[in-house]
Length: 593
Image 1 (cartoon, one colour):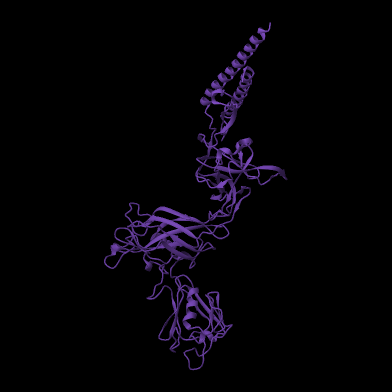
Image 2: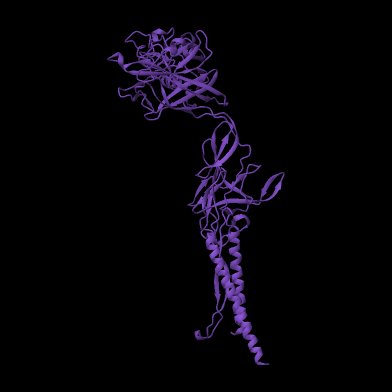
């Protein structure tokens, strides 16, 4: 080692400090870059080999980059709904377009990873950040919210269309007044049900209340047979056995309310809800009929009784007709569920309106997405104020035809008694609600609709207004809709807002992490590529996504300025060493003069 070695060492020092200055310069330049991770500088001494420690001298220096990828940047809010920020561990998975074909980006399938979350929707419906990287994620079913796979792909939301969803349930919560204030109550006879805000069936031409007999709801048809038919009687069999006198044979049919029950071969023939084997029992056949009508037929004293149900007519035909005859019926069997029962005709609408109160309205949708105005009214059909043997009981009605005239049905009773205890709590029905069968409004069929009531959701407390206080009335249907905009929520879910007013989940943004995060290779635009030292990307991360937010640069300007001063001083010191060594060489050369 000597003077020239000292000069070379100082030159190395200048190079190392220049490298540090370059990193400081880059950090300061990117102090406002979204998701930027600063690069520090670490210095490594280079000690020349020496035979003994006492001859060891200080060596040169080299500089290396020191990544700070794991250092969190400051999170700030953003007015852009598709901007995202990661708090904690994790990276967005992205791809870079390798080209464009017919104005559509083409990708080479190479994944990159970034913390830069300034994503916005481009013309093709992709979420692209400010550096041109395309966001990846997993699409979800907009109706169920379930993921449609587990492999992230480049997301695209162009022209997303959600089909119509029919209303299948209504969520309802309300307080019914203990003393309804109806138009009829003010003029009613004192002490009468109407005076207590109730609905009196005798005031109607056709009773609006459901018909109820001792066994079931609906009218009945009894056969004339006196034969000792039991549920165990076979539909066909050998003479003298407990079987019908006229056999049912394979291929015979019984049509119940439009649904066909087919008799199949004995022994091994098909048997399900619409197929009965020829050697099955009368009980099996009646169970199949009951499965269609909703009310099981009964047998007593050899006579079979068919029930229509509360809200439907009964129609049964058989081929051959002798099959019904052997059961004691004349084919075809046709019976209405009861004229006027459970409905309010147009002639009675005025009385019904005076003796009931509004239960609110909700826009429902049929299978094609056609909106239906579903109007509800409550009628109090019994009152505890009438004395012993009476209880506070209500019936719920819905308007089926706003344009009804004469004897046409205008309102339909849902067929359930809602009963309340003295403390205002609902005692019946005891479940979470009821099912309103075969709902049709203005000619638009909704099918059966669940009327859901959460625990404590329906009460009967005193109310000064005497009207229904509605807390919740919502339904789960909607019309078809076109995507209008997208946003990202704080769970990392891309939510689409559609023209039908629905906000539906479209995709889940996935996060990845690495065992060697700081060994990722930095790319242009704040992206990183996998290296051998970083290890492969691992799905899932402990970090969380914040919507409408951005992660800023993790550069600390004050710290960088401090480093800048130290670097400048170190650089100057190295030049002084070179100057001193040069002076010493000049002194040596002067010895020769």
